[in-house]
Length: 260
Image (tube, rainbow, N blue to C red; front, side, top):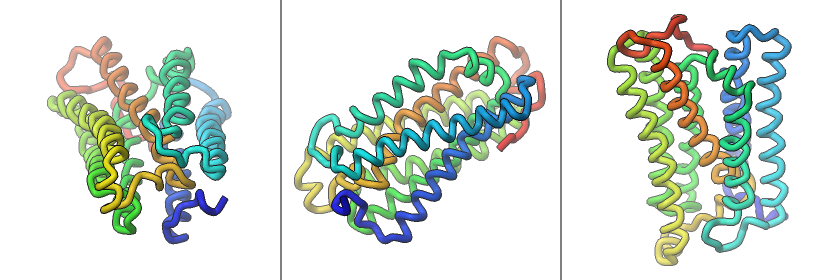
């Protein structure tokens, strides 16, 4: 089992796990506030928040179990963790959760700026760069993944602020930032495939094995599906707002506010 645990220093592994779990709680917070905004009881709102957290904990436990057994540590295109983890999660998020009545009700009540501010959790991308400095990831993959996530996370703050202040440029900023965040994930997937097929790159700079062992396997299992889903939710909210507003910018019927 130890062969399928990251070779990173213990401090990095512990910090990553703690940060990842905190990020899941961070993502669940807006759902609780949206439920309160929708008139649900505090108890039901809390249950929704807890439900999201528990769902992801169970999902990560499932991924961790098979990762520790070495099921994902195979050279395949597409990666086995994608087939066993990312694809099922994407089906659940896009095919089921995003179409439920509860989700649609929460979407009507959540503020746009909170949906944007959620992406601050992508500062976790710094771990890609840390992995690179310990020679566990190829150069192109590590820097593209790390900097793309960090830039998206940092830009989420001013973009959310533009929405909060009702700037006439807010809609343009949101669309541009949202597209950038989605393209970052798509580009990362392309680079991952290229690096995995290039033995010269792998020999010189490390390979992507670290993305198949515990705990960093959480990245490919969790991030693509969850992040793409969160970005599409923002587009759905923009469309919703477009149908309910006729004022410049993104001024909402109720003044937006940070709810995280």
